[in-house]
Length: 161
Image 1 (cartoon, rainbow, N blue to C red):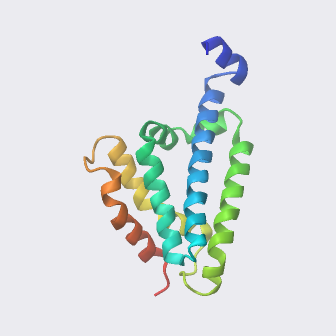
Image 2: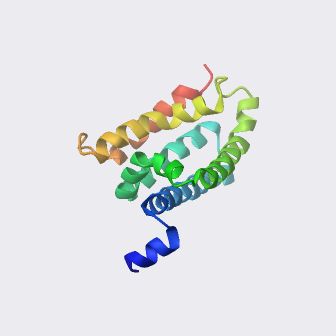
């Protein structure tokens, strides 16, 4: 594909960057939903669901390091390109699916009470923090090496005492 064709289709660099960002988030969403579906079909527990989300993050980032670097660094491209509505629609759908999956466990008191944004940050925060350092070359051990430790930490962060 020529550069001219890209600009004709997308319009400008910001819109290209936004499309790449949104597609990366969509691909991660597909993987996370797949992992949660596998847990659900095996009569999974809340713990297995939380760990599945951590594993999906680790696996997607590890398998797509260049794309992950881009996603971590270019979230603002979506707003600059005027693609906020497209991302918001995708994120709303993803959040709805997560709430649907985890709500029965929350209603049973399996999790500490907390807003959804905090629940999500507790699960993905440590993984994303390590990933940023690994992707930049500051941490030499691959993200996958700490898969179990990060998943266990996420579970401990959200489970009710």
